[in-house]
Image (cartoon, rainbow, N blue to C red; front, side):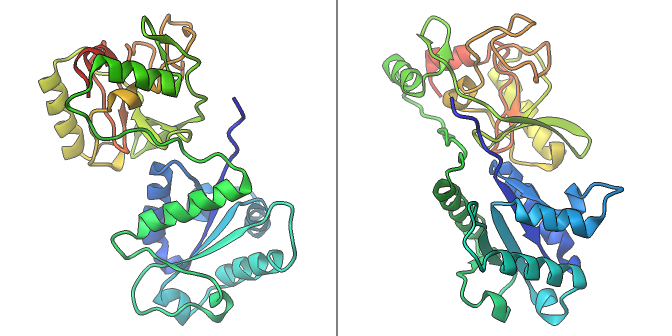
Length: 296
Protein backbone atom coordinates (compact mmCIF):
# COMPACT_ATOMS: atom_id res chain seq x y z
CA UNK A 1 0.00 0.00 0.00
CA UNK A 2 1.10 3.60 -0.57
CA UNK A 3 2.96 5.24 2.28
CA UNK A 4 0.81 7.53 4.43
CA UNK A 5 2.21 11.05 4.24
CA UNK A 6 2.39 13.31 7.26
CA UNK A 7 -0.25 16.04 7.23
CA UNK A 8 1.19 18.73 9.45
CA UNK A 9 -1.14 21.52 10.57
CA UNK A 10 0.54 24.60 12.03
CA UNK A 11 -1.51 26.31 14.75
CA UNK A 12 -0.89 30.05 15.10
CA UNK A 13 -2.49 31.93 18.00
CA UNK A 14 -2.18 34.68 20.60
CA UNK A 15 -0.52 33.52 23.81
CA UNK A 16 -3.59 34.39 25.89
CA UNK A 17 -5.51 31.78 23.90
CA UNK A 18 -3.16 28.90 24.70
CA UNK A 19 -5.77 26.98 26.74
CA UNK A 20 -8.31 27.04 23.91
CA UNK A 21 -5.69 26.11 21.33
CA UNK A 22 -4.49 23.25 23.54
CA UNK A 23 -8.02 21.87 23.31
CA UNK A 24 -8.08 22.34 19.52
CA UNK A 25 -4.73 20.53 19.30
CA UNK A 26 -6.14 17.61 21.28
CA UNK A 27 -9.32 17.43 19.19
CA UNK A 28 -7.36 17.44 15.91
CA UNK A 29 -5.26 14.58 17.24
CA UNK A 30 -8.42 12.67 18.04
CA UNK A 31 -9.66 13.22 14.47
CA UNK A 32 -6.47 11.63 13.16
CA UNK A 33 -4.66 14.78 12.05
CA UNK A 34 -1.10 15.91 12.86
CA UNK A 35 -1.26 19.41 14.37
CA UNK A 36 1.88 21.32 15.38
CA UNK A 37 1.77 23.76 18.30
CA UNK A 38 4.84 25.52 19.68
CA UNK A 39 3.59 25.03 23.24
CA UNK A 40 3.70 21.23 22.74
CA UNK A 41 6.09 20.48 19.88
CA UNK A 42 8.88 23.06 20.04
CA UNK A 43 12.06 21.27 21.09
CA UNK A 44 14.21 22.61 23.89
CA UNK A 45 17.65 23.90 23.01
CA UNK A 46 16.60 25.07 19.53
CA UNK A 47 16.39 28.60 18.14
CA UNK A 48 12.62 28.85 18.46
CA UNK A 49 12.01 31.37 15.67
CA UNK A 50 14.12 29.38 13.21
CA UNK A 51 12.27 26.16 14.01
CA UNK A 52 8.88 27.86 13.75
CA UNK A 53 9.70 29.33 10.34
CA UNK A 54 11.01 25.99 9.13
CA UNK A 55 7.85 24.26 10.39
CA UNK A 56 5.64 26.79 8.59
CA UNK A 57 7.52 26.20 5.35
CA UNK A 58 6.96 22.45 5.62
CA UNK A 59 3.35 22.41 6.81
CA UNK A 60 0.31 21.56 4.70
CA UNK A 61 -2.00 23.94 6.59
CA UNK A 62 -1.59 27.18 8.48
CA UNK A 63 -4.53 27.53 10.88
CA UNK A 64 -4.59 30.99 12.46
CA UNK A 65 -6.83 31.19 15.55
CA UNK A 66 -8.60 34.55 15.75
CA UNK A 67 -10.01 36.01 18.97
CA UNK A 68 -10.30 39.40 20.60
CA UNK A 69 -6.81 38.77 21.96
CA UNK A 70 -5.54 38.55 18.39
CA UNK A 71 -7.24 41.77 17.40
CA UNK A 72 -6.33 43.75 20.51
CA UNK A 73 -2.63 43.08 20.50
CA UNK A 74 -0.73 40.78 18.19
CA UNK A 75 2.43 39.56 19.84
CA UNK A 76 5.74 39.60 18.01
CA UNK A 77 5.72 35.85 17.49
CA UNK A 78 2.22 35.80 16.01
CA UNK A 79 3.00 38.73 13.69
CA UNK A 80 6.14 36.95 12.51
CA UNK A 81 4.24 33.74 11.80
CA UNK A 82 1.52 35.56 9.86
CA UNK A 83 4.07 37.57 7.89
CA UNK A 84 5.99 34.42 7.01
CA UNK A 85 3.00 32.43 5.76
CA UNK A 86 1.58 35.36 3.75
CA UNK A 87 4.95 35.80 2.09
CA UNK A 88 5.05 32.09 1.24
CA UNK A 89 1.58 32.17 -0.32
CA UNK A 90 2.39 35.09 -2.64
CA UNK A 91 4.07 32.83 -5.16
CA UNK A 92 3.18 29.40 -6.60
CA UNK A 93 4.79 26.52 -4.69
CA UNK A 94 5.25 22.86 -5.53
CA UNK A 95 3.72 22.10 -2.12
CA UNK A 96 1.17 24.86 -1.48
CA UNK A 97 0.08 25.87 2.02
CA UNK A 98 -3.62 26.11 2.81
CA UNK A 99 -4.37 29.09 5.06
CA UNK A 100 -7.47 28.62 7.25
CA UNK A 101 -8.58 31.40 9.62
CA UNK A 102 -10.50 30.01 12.61
CA UNK A 103 -12.58 32.28 14.82
CA UNK A 104 -12.53 31.21 18.45
CA UNK A 105 -15.40 33.49 19.50
CA UNK A 106 -18.30 35.46 18.08
CA UNK A 107 -18.28 39.13 17.08
CA UNK A 108 -14.60 39.10 16.14
CA UNK A 109 -13.61 40.50 12.77
CA UNK A 110 -10.87 38.92 10.73
CA UNK A 111 -7.65 40.92 10.47
CA UNK A 112 -7.32 42.65 7.12
CA UNK A 113 -4.60 40.19 6.05
CA UNK A 114 -7.17 37.38 6.06
CA UNK A 115 -10.20 39.25 4.72
CA UNK A 116 -10.04 37.27 1.48
CA UNK A 117 -10.15 33.89 3.23
CA UNK A 118 -13.23 31.97 4.29
CA UNK A 119 -13.15 31.62 8.08
CA UNK A 120 -14.43 28.71 10.16
CA UNK A 121 -16.32 29.50 13.35
CA UNK A 122 -14.92 27.08 15.89
CA UNK A 123 -17.30 28.35 18.57
CA UNK A 124 -20.23 27.01 16.55
CA UNK A 125 -21.47 23.52 17.56
CA UNK A 126 -20.46 22.20 14.13
CA UNK A 127 -17.24 24.22 14.00
CA UNK A 128 -14.85 21.35 14.64
CA UNK A 129 -16.56 19.18 12.04
CA UNK A 130 -16.38 22.06 9.53
CA UNK A 131 -12.65 22.38 10.18
CA UNK A 132 -12.19 18.62 9.80
CA UNK A 133 -14.02 18.66 6.47
CA UNK A 134 -11.90 21.57 5.23
CA UNK A 135 -8.70 19.79 6.25
CA UNK A 136 -9.73 16.53 4.58
CA UNK A 137 -10.65 18.35 1.38
CA UNK A 138 -7.32 20.15 1.37
CA UNK A 139 -5.42 16.93 2.03
CA UNK A 140 -7.17 15.27 -0.90
CA UNK A 141 -6.22 18.16 -3.19
CA UNK A 142 -2.62 17.92 -1.99
CA UNK A 143 -2.55 14.18 -2.60
CA UNK A 144 -2.15 13.35 1.09
CA UNK A 145 -3.78 10.38 2.76
CA UNK A 146 -6.83 11.23 4.85
CA UNK A 147 -8.17 9.15 7.75
CA UNK A 148 -10.00 6.00 6.68
CA UNK A 149 -13.49 6.31 8.13
CA UNK A 150 -14.91 3.15 9.67
CA UNK A 151 -18.43 2.48 10.91
CA UNK A 152 -18.64 3.82 14.45
CA UNK A 153 -22.24 2.94 15.33
CA UNK A 154 -23.30 -0.64 16.23
CA UNK A 155 -25.81 -2.53 14.10
CA UNK A 156 -28.32 -4.75 15.87
CA UNK A 157 -29.08 -7.02 12.91
CA UNK A 158 -25.68 -7.79 11.44
CA UNK A 159 -25.94 -11.13 9.67
CA UNK A 160 -23.05 -13.51 8.91
CA UNK A 161 -23.45 -12.57 5.25
CA UNK A 162 -23.11 -8.86 6.17
CA UNK A 163 -19.96 -9.61 8.16
CA UNK A 164 -18.41 -11.58 5.32
CA UNK A 165 -19.22 -8.83 2.82
CA UNK A 166 -17.72 -6.14 5.07
CA UNK A 167 -14.52 -8.14 5.63
CA UNK A 168 -14.06 -8.70 1.89
CA UNK A 169 -14.84 -5.10 0.94
CA UNK A 170 -12.34 -3.79 3.50
CA UNK A 171 -9.92 -6.63 2.70
CA UNK A 172 -9.46 -7.21 6.43
CA UNK A 173 -7.56 -10.23 7.64
CA UNK A 174 -9.96 -12.48 9.58
CA UNK A 175 -8.99 -16.07 10.30
CA UNK A 176 -11.50 -18.56 8.81
CA UNK A 177 -13.35 -15.70 7.08
CA UNK A 178 -11.04 -13.89 4.65
CA UNK A 179 -7.30 -13.93 4.11
CA UNK A 180 -7.10 -10.20 3.40
CA UNK A 181 -4.06 -7.95 3.50
CA UNK A 182 -5.48 -5.68 6.19
CA UNK A 183 -4.85 -1.93 6.15
CA UNK A 184 -1.64 0.04 6.45
CA UNK A 185 -1.57 1.69 9.88
CA UNK A 186 0.40 4.73 10.92
CA UNK A 187 0.55 4.23 14.68
CA UNK A 188 1.89 6.81 17.11
CA UNK A 189 2.38 5.93 20.79
CA UNK A 190 1.29 8.77 23.06
CA UNK A 191 1.20 9.42 26.77
CA UNK A 192 -1.73 11.66 27.72
CA UNK A 193 -2.20 12.64 31.35
CA UNK A 194 0.24 9.88 32.26
CA UNK A 195 -1.70 7.13 30.44
CA UNK A 196 -0.32 5.23 27.40
CA UNK A 197 -2.52 5.21 24.30
CA UNK A 198 -1.96 4.43 20.61
CA UNK A 199 -3.03 6.95 17.98
CA UNK A 200 -3.78 5.49 14.55
CA UNK A 201 -3.48 8.25 11.95
CA UNK A 202 -4.83 5.92 9.27
CA UNK A 203 -8.26 5.59 10.86
CA UNK A 204 -8.29 8.56 13.24
CA UNK A 205 -8.85 6.18 16.18
CA UNK A 206 -6.96 6.28 19.48
CA UNK A 207 -6.74 2.97 21.30
CA UNK A 208 -5.94 2.17 24.90
CA UNK A 209 -2.58 0.40 24.85
CA UNK A 210 -3.10 -1.93 27.79
CA UNK A 211 -5.57 -4.72 28.45
CA UNK A 212 -7.77 -5.85 31.32
CA UNK A 213 -7.89 -9.37 29.90
CA UNK A 214 -11.03 -11.39 29.38
CA UNK A 215 -14.29 -10.09 30.77
CA UNK A 216 -18.00 -10.38 30.16
CA UNK A 217 -19.89 -7.83 28.10
CA UNK A 218 -21.46 -6.33 31.24
CA UNK A 219 -18.08 -6.11 32.95
CA UNK A 220 -16.72 -4.41 29.83
CA UNK A 221 -19.53 -1.84 30.00
CA UNK A 222 -18.76 -1.26 33.69
CA UNK A 223 -15.08 -0.86 32.89
CA UNK A 224 -15.89 1.73 30.21
CA UNK A 225 -17.99 3.65 32.72
CA UNK A 226 -15.04 3.60 35.12
CA UNK A 227 -12.65 4.93 32.45
CA UNK A 228 -15.04 7.73 31.55
CA UNK A 229 -15.68 8.60 35.19
CA UNK A 230 -11.98 9.17 35.82
CA UNK A 231 -11.41 10.71 32.38
CA UNK A 232 -8.79 8.20 31.34
CA UNK A 233 -6.09 9.90 29.21
CA UNK A 234 -8.15 13.09 29.45
CA UNK A 235 -11.20 11.68 27.63
CA UNK A 236 -14.66 10.80 28.89
CA UNK A 237 -16.23 9.26 25.79
CA UNK A 238 -14.68 5.80 25.60
CA UNK A 239 -16.88 3.07 24.11
CA UNK A 240 -16.86 -0.45 22.72
CA UNK A 241 -15.58 -0.64 19.14
CA UNK A 242 -17.77 -1.77 16.30
CA UNK A 243 -16.77 -5.03 14.67
CA UNK A 244 -15.41 -3.05 11.71
CA UNK A 245 -13.19 -0.95 13.97
CA UNK A 246 -11.93 -3.95 15.92
CA UNK A 247 -11.13 -5.93 12.76
CA UNK A 248 -9.14 -3.00 11.40
CA UNK A 249 -6.44 -3.88 13.94
CA UNK A 250 -5.90 -7.38 12.53
CA UNK A 251 -2.57 -8.00 10.84
CA UNK A 252 -2.10 -10.69 8.17
CA UNK A 253 1.01 -11.99 9.96
CA UNK A 254 1.61 -12.99 13.56
CA UNK A 255 3.85 -10.78 15.66
CA UNK A 256 6.67 -12.17 17.82
CA UNK A 257 4.12 -13.02 20.52
CA UNK A 258 2.02 -15.12 18.15
CA UNK A 259 -0.75 -12.51 17.84
CA UNK A 260 -2.27 -11.05 14.69
CA UNK A 261 -1.79 -7.46 15.82
CA UNK A 262 0.95 -4.84 15.65
CA UNK A 263 3.63 -5.35 18.32
CA UNK A 264 3.22 -1.73 19.44
CA UNK A 265 0.29 -2.95 21.56
CA UNK A 266 0.79 -4.65 24.92
CA UNK A 267 2.29 -8.14 24.62
CA UNK A 268 -0.47 -9.92 26.52
CA UNK A 269 -3.24 -8.50 24.33
CA UNK A 270 -5.65 -10.97 22.87
CA UNK A 271 -7.57 -10.25 19.70
CA UNK A 272 -8.98 -6.86 20.54
CA UNK A 273 -8.62 -5.65 24.11
CA UNK A 274 -7.95 -1.97 23.62
CA UNK A 275 -9.65 1.38 23.70
CA UNK A 276 -9.91 4.23 21.31
CA UNK A 277 -11.13 7.72 21.80
CA UNK A 278 -13.15 8.35 18.75
CA UNK A 279 -14.00 6.51 21.11
CA UNK A 280 -13.37 2.82 21.39
CA UNK A 281 -12.79 0.22 24.05
CA UNK A 282 -12.84 -3.51 23.38
CA UNK A 283 -12.07 -5.83 26.26
CA UNK A 284 -13.69 -9.09 25.25
CA UNK A 285 -10.46 -11.04 25.42
CA UNK A 286 -11.41 -13.07 22.37
CA UNK A 287 -12.65 -9.68 21.36
CA UNK A 288 -14.01 -9.83 17.88
CA UNK A 289 -15.29 -13.39 18.12
CA UNK A 290 -18.61 -12.49 19.82
CA UNK A 291 -19.10 -9.78 17.21
CA UNK A 292 -18.57 -12.17 14.32
CA UNK A 293 -21.31 -14.40 15.68
CA UNK A 294 -23.71 -11.81 17.07
CA UNK A 295 -22.98 -8.62 15.15
CA UNK A 296 -22.24 -5.11 16.42
